[in-house]
Length: 287
Ligand SMILES: [Fe+2]
Ligand SMILES: [Fe+2]
Image 1 (cartoon, rainbow, N blue to C red):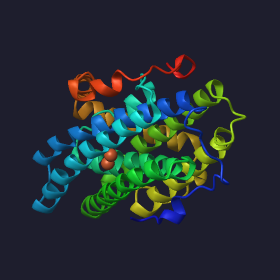
Image 2: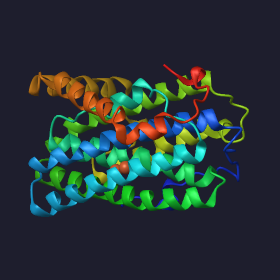
Image 3: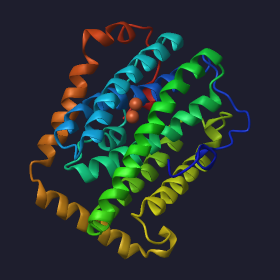
C-alpha cells in the first residue's frame, strides 16, 4: 500500500468497547460493515471490464474474500447476540455503483476500501475480545490487498491518461464532503462521553487527513486541499457530476440495481440466523 499501517493508525489511548454495555452501538457499527461486505460481493461483475488477466484473477479472488467477510460479520453478530439494523444513507451512497473502471478502482477500492480499512483498524484497537480481534485481523489483511490493488490501478490509469486525475478529483471531494456530514450526524445521536466515542471527532479528522495523503500519493491531488480554494473544489465536484451524468444517464438505474441486489442478499436465508438474533434498541441510531 502507498500508506503504512502506522500512517493510518489512530491512538485510542486504550479506550475499549464493552460487548454488553455497548451492544446497540456495536450492532449499528457492524450493520454498516455487513451491508458494505454484502455489496462488496458484487465486485465479481467487474471481471467483464478487467483490463488484463492479472486484474481478472484479482477480482475473482476478491469476490470470494468479500463473501468470507460476510461470514466474519455474521460471527460478529452471533458474538454480540444482536441482529443487524438498517444502514445509514451515506453508507448506501458510498456503496453505490461506479459507472466505469477508473471510478471503480480509484473511488470504490483505493478510497472506499481505504475508509473501511481504517474503521477495521479502529475495531481491532477498541474491541476487548482476543478471538474476535483475531478473526477480524484476517479480513483486515485481505482488505489491505484490495486497497493496494485500487491504488496501483489508479496510478496506472493516471499515467496512461493524465486527464483521469481531474475527472476523479471531484468525485473524491464529494465523498469527503459526505463523510464530514456523517460526523455531524454521529455527534447528534451518540453518547459522546463514551470513552471511545469521545475520540470520534479527532478520529474522523485523522481519516480525512489519511485520505488526503492517499490522494496525493496516488496522484489525484497535486497540492494539499488547504491550498485549493472553495470555488476550485466546488467547480471540481460540479464538473465531475456533469461529466458522470453526461456519460451515463442510466447511472441511477445502475445505482439502484446494486443496492436492490444487496437488499435481496440481506433477506436471503443465508443471513436468516443473524436476523433472528435478539433485537437491540437501535432507534436512536437510525435514519
Ligand atoms: Fe470486505
Ligand atoms: Fe474489500
